[in-house]
Length: 137
Image (cartoon, rainbow, N blue to C red; front, side):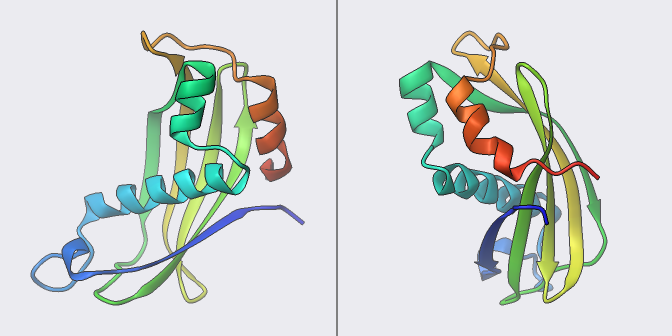
């Protein structure tokens, strides 16, 4: 069974358009928050990675499918897991669920870079922290 990160959110008025439907760009914010919480779950943070390793994790690409809309006051769950690693990057699969329905599905390619935005090798202990969440279809 795969090990995944799970993060729950509630849709607030500020997340929606005038019709009470989540504005499409806000799903990217939800996914980012879930990735930040995933780091926290393994004892890391973006600030700690910057301070301790002089590194940042940046999004290189994101493929996202919008299957259904979320609405005002919906309770959503974001499921995230790692699908691949390279020396300098990793890919996360993230799905946003309302109840048991997948409403958004994404693949996000993340790269470790130094403060000059040059790719760097993923630090070994970070790799070790994330490997339990590796799931290959």
